[in-house]
Figure 1 (tube, rainbow, N blue to C red):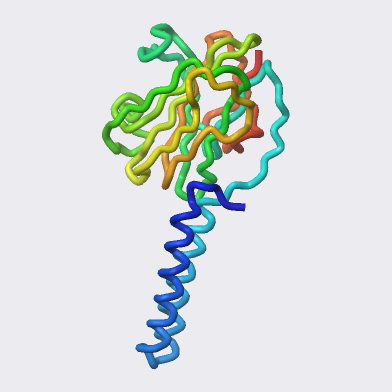
Figure 2: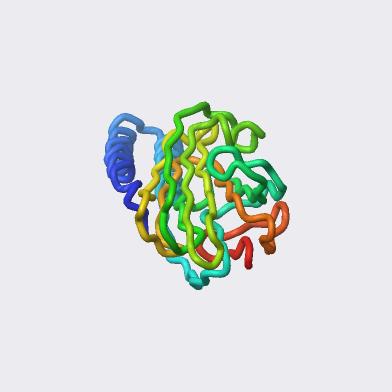
Length: 216
């Protein structure tokens, strides 16, 4: 199953692959060269397909827990000053996605979207300390009655050149459903209340829509 954000690119890649294979077959008469170039084209095509995959996830909806919005590795767990929306101290949990990860963003909690803003910016490597405030990014806040307000931030990296965000203010959203997509590697930051019980550790690999990041 592929994400809708990849349909156009997959179609273009399919056409390019077909043209490339036909061209190689017509103009390269040496068998091993023809096989080598054809194999390289097929590998690149498979990489495009796997990047836009959108596997079904078994989300157990729970208003007292925050689930991981993305697949990846936990690279930051620390107390920080969040200055865009809360203007107070929060627990930040950051998840880094490599180009090989699933890049669908999912809502970490159910509730109402109370803030959604896009920021143009730089393309520093995603693990750079200033990426959260200087890179291209979107900031979204979802609120429910059990936890309150949770902020998550989609951040572009050195390779990621487009962030897709579906969250709109006053929209009611369901935990684990599609919230957007980040193309070609990046990271997502979560900003949680200080009394959050964190259920993950540094360098832990997590699955979007399933791994529980924090409970209350």
